[in-house]
Image (cartoon, rainbow, N blue to C red; front, side, top):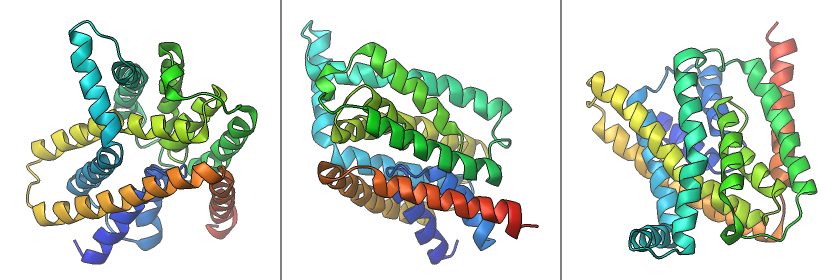
Length: 268
């Protein structure tokens, strides 16, 4: 694969995975507007591995705290780290079930450009409403299993391109009254099992197809996705300490409007 193609795909995946603007939606648009062939499972797996590495690197303290908390939980001691880890498990379970059903019955049906345009706009407005309605007083130490489950159910909507996994989970957390940075932190940590599951699924398909001839391209894609993803997380966390989601909402509305114009007028 040409180096420029790898660079574009890695940057799109790495940046949009963590900003509330939909990574799947942007990745669908790359071959449509460039005419490039589908990048294939190997590159998809590598991009997911890269973004997984990014979130593990940025939140390594939280990851270490969860691992230590789970170890102490086995010894009968309850700590916030274990509670956070269990909440991530609870929030991930609905997405695993939804992902299985989507793979079986609806994967191609959800790749419509028209659907993407409307979800970009609609879930941008959801993010706007949730950010306005949600008060800002809570941190993740107060997150309960019921709230984690609701956030996990909201995450299932992210299988619709244009929704944004990070956007919909942040919206749900904001509605429960968590600070913007805490909502983002839980969303990013929740991406660990979500990305791991996606990478495992796609990796299994790749192995069955015996596609291991792109190791150099995969390594480069993973590395670039990891760098882009790390910078996107750092930007998002810093931005939310001083500002809101307005810039991302505006981007979604503008982008969705452009896509609607393309669907209903330009494409005729």
